[in-house]
Picture 1 (cartoon, rainbow, N blue to C red):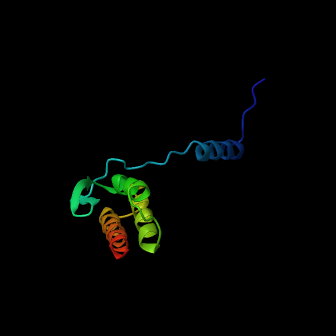
Picture 2: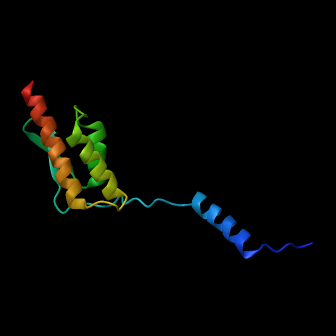
Picture 3: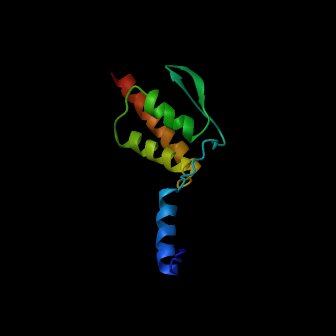
Length: 108
């Protein structure tokens, strides 16, 4: 016996499957127009090319990972990777977080 589903039942089933199988696109290959150079002291030997590298550096490379400027940079880089934020804004936020961290280190 074959049972046909009404349009309403089929529609509800399809929506449920679609939401469970959704894919979040991430722009891992997004680069800034100009890299940001970071490093220890006066030696700025590491090029941060885009929000992916910026986010990685924010989470693992900065010795101080606190404060509103830091969290703004994390959010801006994450949003840019998800296509929900501006690349240039992410770069500016990254530079601000890096500069603030370097200032705090020099203060001590």
